[in-house]
Length: 260
Image 1 (cartoon, rainbow, N blue to C red):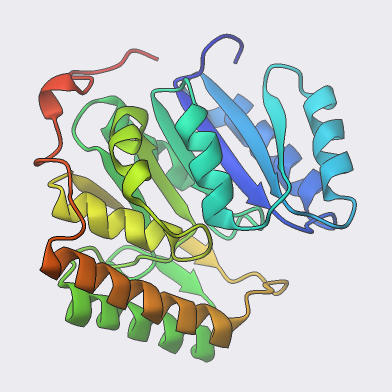
Image 2 (tube, helix red, strand yellow):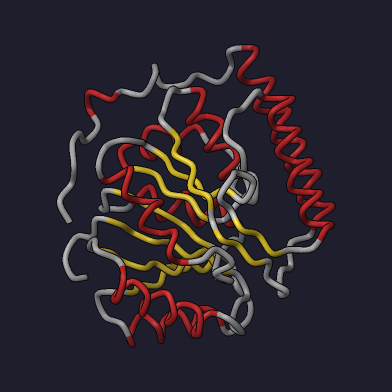
């Protein structure tokens, strides 16, 4: 949709030349057909060394006003999201993984509570009733253990921190993002924890999710970084070093339903 979008959908990518064109084209076709709000897709290339950036530029040219490409020299999913979300003019910013593991029919239920003013942040969940998940036993066990650790260490109430399918009202993002330190895979876990502690309303959306056979996440290194992130947050929150906005300044947030 042309003009200022209500929803900006960010697809962070790094060395994804094999999937990028087909999957972004599929996303655009879905949005044109089934998404009732003004939207913009932003491909956020963070440090690719293959042909990803060239393909992102081609997609921008093929879909003027609907797709844009942003390039960052340094890698990091969190860095890409922090950069694009902080500068967005949309009312709601979202992200999804380029592999489209999450069924796109969940996108409207993800953003609708934010646009109507009922929630400030929404997250897809593969671990709540109503979700349908296809993935191997190893990843299932790792995911469940990760979320159990979050509940044990940080006393969180949300069910799935790692699902690559989240949205936040831009006004809430501007309050939270300066506090989020991580620029890699722990970024959205940290954002969720801080949002919950700050009193933001988090809406969880059960999703249909199919594991991508092309996933290149380094599980051991990522798990270690996540554990360090959990401990850093626990220390910051328990010592008072980390100062949160006072129960989110809802008076200054957008209220009521936003028309499509």
